[in-house]
Amino acid sequence: MSQHPKPSQTALDLHRAVPVVDLHADTLLVTDMFAYDMTVRHAPHGPRSPLFWHVDVPRLVDARVGGVGFGIVTNPLQSEEARERTVRRQAAHFREAASRDERLVFAGSAAELRAAHASGRIGGFFGIEGAHALGDRLDLLESFFGEGVRYLTLVHFSDNAFACPAQGLGRNQRDGLTELGRAAVAEMNRVGLVVDLAHINKPGFLEAARLCDAPLWVTHTGVRGAFDHWRNIDDDMLRAVAERDGCVGIIFFPGFLGRGTWGDLDQVVRHLEYVRATIGVRHCAIGTDMDGFISALPREIRDVADLPLLTDALLRAGWSDTEVEATLGGNALRVLEGVERRAATR
Image (cartoon, rainbow, N blue to C red; front, side):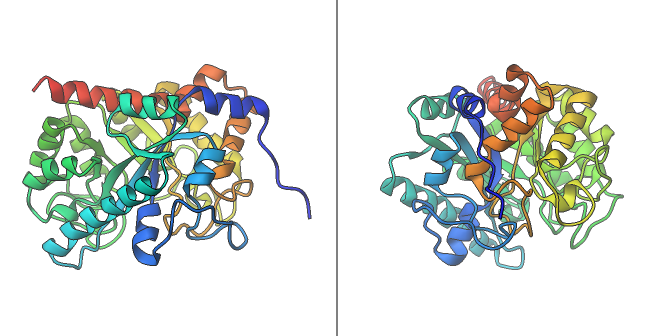
C-alpha cells in the first residue's frame, strides 16, 4: 500500500499565514444525530471516508484551519417549533464543545475570525441550511443571528415558503422567489446575514442576487463549466455572484465535480480554475461539505487534516501565493466584512 501524501512545508506555512475558512461543514448535524464529540480526534473510516467523521478540533488544528461555517440542518417535515428547537440545540452543541476545548471559539465577524486565527484557535459560526427552519417567520432571522447564525441557505432539498430547490421535493426551473422570499433577502441584508445561494434553482438564484444589496456567497457547489451537473451553477449564476462581489465555495464531493463517484483533487482545482477564469480569483473559495453525508472525498483527502494538500495542488497548477490565500479564506472574509458594513449603515 502506498504511503498517504503529506503536505509540503510551503502549504503548511500558507495555512499558518492566512485564516483558512471552510464555508460549509455539517459536523453539528453529526453531533446532533450520533452524539459525535468534535473535541476528540477521530480516525478516518472506510475507503474514501464516506458520509461523515471528517472534522474535529484536533484535525482542524492539524490543517491550520482558522474558521468553519458549521451548517445547521432541520427536518422540513417537523413542526415549526421543532425546527426552531433544532437550530438552537445544534448551536448549543458547538458552545458546549467550545467550553471543553479552548482552541474552539465562536467567531461571528471577520474581525473575530482573524483574531481567532492570530491566537492559534478555530473560529466557528453557523449557517442554517434551508429557510424552512423559519416556517414563515421573518422575525426569526434576527433571533437566529443572536444565536450565532451568520448565513442562511434559502432552500435545501425541498421547497418552502421562500423559494424552490434545484433538485428535491417541489423542484422546478420555472419559479423564482416568493413574496416572502424577496422580503427575506431584504431582512437578511438588514440583520447582517449572508445570503447563501447553494441548492436554489436558477430563477430563484438570479432573482435573489439581483435583489441583494450586499455581498453574497454560494457555500458549497461545483460549476457547470467544469462539469455539467444539476447541483452545479452555470456562467450566468457565476456572473451574478461577481456582480455582488461574492464568492463561490467549491465542494469536495467528486460526484458533483466529475464523472462517477470517485475523483481526486485535480477535480477541485479544475472547478476553482474555471471560477478564476470566468469571474476572477476574487470570487474563489472553498466549502468542503465535510460531514455532510457525501459518499466520498477526493482520493487524496481522508478528512479535514488533509486540506493543505489542496494548497499544494493549487501551487502545482501555477497559482500564486496571493491567489491561494484569497481562495483559502481572504475572499470569504471580504464577503463577511461587506455584509457587516452594509448592515451597519442601515
